Length: 133
Image 1 (tube, helix red, strand yellow):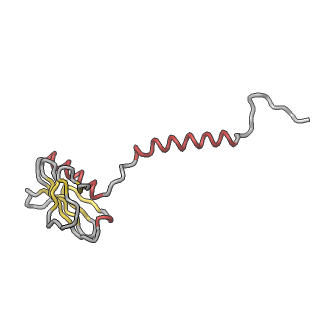
Image 2 (cartoon, rainbow, N blue to C red):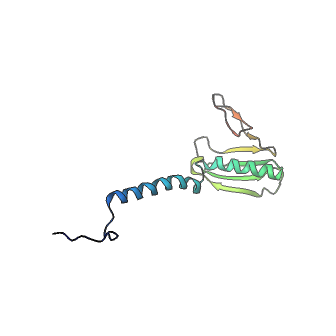
Image 3 (cartoon, rainbow, N blue to C red):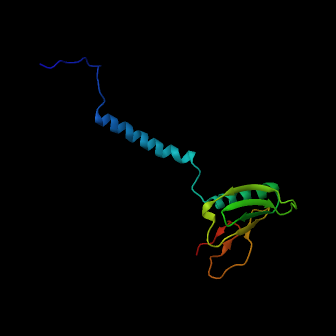
């Protein structure tokens, strides 16, 4: 005859209880994790947003330069010393088109420097992004 245990004394966790705990932890992690990670954006787009914010705060026109190797820097156009205000590296920026440069005005508009190539999407200076057809 099997021995009966007292009502409040259990030795193991059931598989169902374990699964419920794992599901609750997974759902709570799915809700909380996006708040701790920055939104997915290319580093150059992030640099462009940071440069826009800095240009508006300083009331100056800034230049964002992206080199062929993926390094980017932000300089003040009015500063003859060429002091770097922001800098970073983005491996994805080293695309086939090579070096790029962008002027960001004190009003927050972004103007690409250089020739505009036919067949490329046009640039929206207010949104600082390519226009979608």
